[in-house]
Each structure stands twice: as C-alpha cells, then as structure tokens.
Length: 329
Image (cartoon, rainbow, N blue to C red; front, side):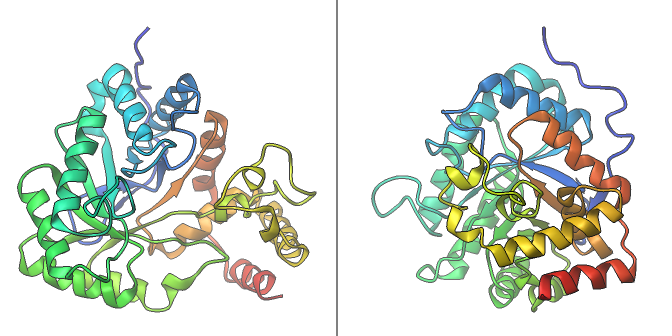
C-alpha cells in the first residue's frame, strides 16, 4: 500500500529562514550519512524517511559518497522518492554534496569544475531526480582556485540542476571569500554545513560571525558527537553500538574523563525533563544562530524522540552556565 503523509505533519515542526534567502528549513533535518547504504535494511529506511516527513521534517541530506558502498544511499533514497514520496516532491528539500573521493583517477575528488558537475549528474541519475534543492561543495580544495569551484556551483544553479548552492567544512576566511566570489557571479551562497556540538565548538570562533554578516544560513552535522552526547555510553560500550563498528567513533575516544562530563550533562538534561540527546539538539538551536540541525537515526523511534527536543528548546542563563561548567571540568 502506497504511503500517504499525515495531514497534521506541519503542526508542530518549527521552520527557520535560511540566511537572507526566501527558503525555510525544518529545525531538524534527516541526514543519510549512516544506515541508508547497501548493507542496511530497505524497509527500515522507508520507515525512517516517512516517519521524519510525518513529523514535519522536510529536508533530507545526502552526499555522493554516502553508503557503503559510495552512492548507495542516493540509490536507496531515489527508490524511496519514486515509490513513496513522489507526490510530495515539492514539499521536500533534497541536498547532496561532492568534494571527497568518489571514483578513481584525477577527476573523482576535490573541487574542480569537471568533478563537481560530473558528480552531480551521477547523483541525479542515482536518485532519479531532475534537480536537487541544495548542492554543496563538501570540503575546501587548496589546489583548485576558489573561483573555479564557485563558477561550477554558479553554473549548476543557473542550469537548474540545483536551486541553491552551499559549502561544508570551510573555515571562516574561506567561507567569506567564497561568498564574495559567488555574489559577484549572481548566485548567493545559501548555506554552510559545519560540524558543531557541545564538544566541538570551533564555529563560534569567527565562522558564525561571517555567516551572520554574509546572510548565509547554517546546518550543523554531528550534533550528538557521533552518539557521545547521549546516555548510551555512560555505563560502558554496548555491543553493536557505533563505537564497536565505526571508523568515525572508536572505543579509545570514550575515556573516563569524557564520560564524567557526559554524566554531568545528562543530569542537567534530566532537570529539564529531556534526554541528553534532546538537550544537545536544542542546545545547537539556541539563540537562533543555526537554521537547522542534522539528525541521524538507525530506527524511526529515534527520530520521534529527537523531534521532541523542540518541545523544550529554550535555555535559562543558569542552564547554559551549568553546561559550560560541565564541559570545562
């Protein structure tokens, strides 16, 4: 039986304007970095995407190399779009990226015009889409002139293959320069996707100021620090958890002094009537500086729990001070 979206799907989600553009993004967006690859359960993927949409999440974030194997997340999302979500295409923001290694040879990596345009063409074919809403350069390329990368992004938008352009993992200086170049080309830089969470706050050292000045939106990835900002590891490393099978979070990172901080943060979250994960997501959105926060999930219930973070997204000055104190100890 074909999926039919819930009629009340827009009743509780918050939507934030992306920089100085006309586009709004759901405060939480679903990232397909993990659990949408060729080795994952397809029915579970469908359940996660449809659950997210029923909860008002309209933005689905991919990259060319998400899998494993690289490209398989886009293939699976394309199947979901075709068989479940096709009637809702105009209610959905789809983003993808290129910038990391995707295929062999000198043209399958980094930031050249050749790579970016070819990669997006491949992504569109895998997803069965005529266009994506946002196309990102996934990381800065020190060897390709920024003007060339910017020109490729501008061409992609003007060609209609993407509606907006963004960057990810650029520092403050790089972001400012890219924004200036793209503005000269008549295609404003819409959004920046940085890593940001309570443990990794580098964007506060200049990047957020640039984004505000340039009118660029922002969406954070890894807001839960690959699961460290949950209560999952408080009593050890559970079998089957990400720390037992991921190269992005290894068991040697989970040190006693880090867990001490997590325990203190968990107590603050309990005092707010939230899980630590919910508080960490709400913290990312505090003060309205981020447009959206990317969540990952391995099952639909995690998405349902994460969306509840929006029910208590305000912080008192005392709570923010307690969080900073817990992190500083």
